[in-house]
View (tube, rainbow, N blue to C red):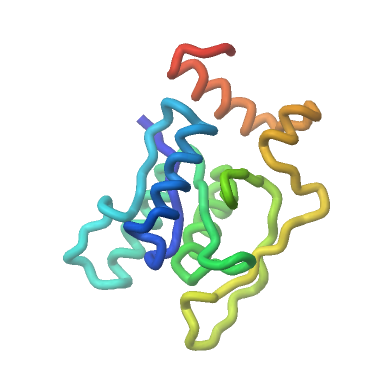
Length: 158
């Protein structure tokens, strides 16, 4: 079964924020399996090997949901996961305080030593939450398909 990959900074692992974002993903995509790298990645691996395993998980995902380490910023690992998903045409959503967005852009990464604040995220002008898109009838076809699949798995409306 395919899954949703939850890309987030290691600084968020094991925190109430991680629990809250996972609950948000379950609320918006009920019935879908969530692959959380916190606990799924082999802890005996070094950093580069762990990142390779995360990128492998991304390639197997139905969609990717990511969060920011701080408003407007993602770290190097999440940046690489987003780029990997883009390279494989996997839908990507930003979760921010319980709201999901599918339109954003990333700045070119900062090549400096700060891997935690590595790339900026910019919202694009037409950026609407999934809830706003549903209300306005603007939901993109991939999101509609995912929502229908999630509803079918929980036995809800189609």
